[in-house]
Length: 132
Image (cartoon, rainbow, N blue to C red; front, side, top):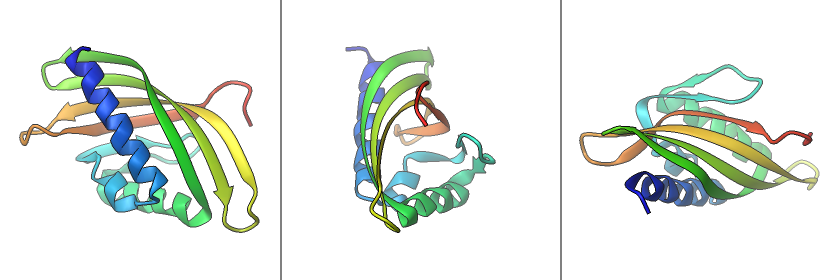
């Protein structure tokens, strides 16, 4: 397994753990200080404060359970990795208990920090075709 594969696999585990625990603080710590998160159909979120606010809004609306599986990992420079991840999502809304299941494709640009930690610099995602 390449270093890029190992980094993306570890991020998948950390990402799933934070989301499944509805822990917006842990989720936000996966992002660099100058990160950008681009939710589909919404305005981009810049930096930890906006990212945490957006993620917490999701947790306030529903209980999320995700399983993240790496599809591609590409080392594009010594301190940069591009990853594509498939995510299986099950969501139960708090308001009415309605369950939704869908698949996402997530892309990450990861940057190794001076501390050695790999953090998300950019994140985008969309639902897989044919899903509502």
